[in-house]
Length: 288
Ligand code: ATR
Image: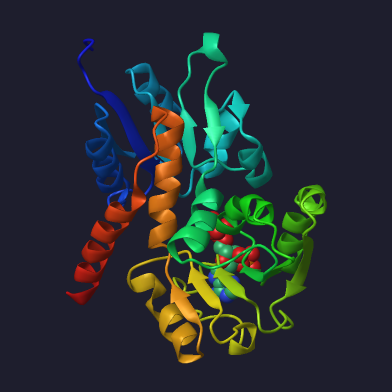
């Protein structure tokens, strides 16, 4: 390493070849004039912590973390932001030196989702009724910031009811502090006509279809799948066919990246041109 070497970052996961994060962060770096490189770090399933430690010891400054390592990343950090604590998972690490407090874990997925809904999609969360489908890592990562946006109500519905209840219980104080009515429901009785419906399940990937009926949608309401590309297509078609405003997870992906970038570099990139470029890329890919 010399003083002129760019700072190193990566996205760590398994698999990782498909990740769009290097492209997004490279555009952010160009736009803001930051001297950094961002690569993909494939971590063996049983060797995440050692792989990451080597990356940090080689001089890297931080990383994003994706499936299936967000929980391990959270455990490895010396310090955690409140939103990472609520999620019990981290998608962002900053490799601060021990003298500065040690590695910091953050979770920017939720704020990315909220920003995509309120800024990019121009929908209002404050006072809204929200249905969050799923209680796995994706849903856990976004519930805290969703509550902070102060909707009137959030219902968490999940196939395995216990997991939804556990997630709700963990966020109960946070919801009370923000005046949000938070509850768990079954997939069989998820409620009706939500202003915002967020799919955080892997149901579309497992070919299971959308595990609730269209009565959860409201004409003109928002229906958002955290996936993007072909994995989200069935959901988008279904939501549109029932009069909802359909949105995939690409905006959330770009926004969570911007929040990580800001944590590392202290400068917030303009997400609009990057989201437009990613949209063109994903739509182009989908068409082939
Ligand atoms: P992730 O970290 O991506 O959220 P996960 O922790 O495996 O992955 O969670 C996947 C979520 O999708 C869970 O809420 C899961 O429901 P269960 O908790 O009951 O397993 C949900 N899911 C996956 N396949 C599903 C299907 N076919 N129908 C309904 N829900 C499904």
